[in-house]
Amino acid sequence: MKHTFKITLAAFISMLASSASAEDYTVSRLIDLDVSTQQAWNVVGDFCDIDDWHPAVSSCSLKVIDGSLHRILNTTSGAEFVEKRIAVEPGLSYTYSIVSSPLPVENYIATLSVETLKSTTITWEGRFKSDDPSMEDTIAGIYESGLAAVEEQFAE
Image (cartoon, rainbow, N blue to C red; front, side, top):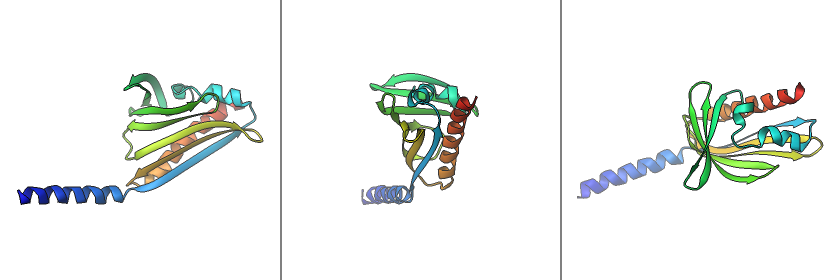
């Protein structure tokens, strides 16, 4: 019986060590647009319209799971992301977490917001943990390509 406890304790210590090595990351990207806040929100504000403006997302569907709204995203490369909406301030922002994805990230929470400063600013910011330092650049690339596509919509 002591032997079983030692194995369990060793496994627990190993788990703590591996989770302790995950780094915390914060990634934030923004664009400024010469459009009204309402015009910007009309493009990015609907939780499942991301497939209309993000070039990497081929489809989005909504599903209520355990009383919470989730979006299931399919990417152009065939990956699937399940994201849970945590909060929404209509016309201003929504916050979501990743429930499952192929990315090696944990505790991912992001907010997409629209606000008026000198012009209309769309900000996409996320926080997460990962053992893989390249995830910071990966997430930044996701934000940058999405926001660039939004900017292109208003350049036409």
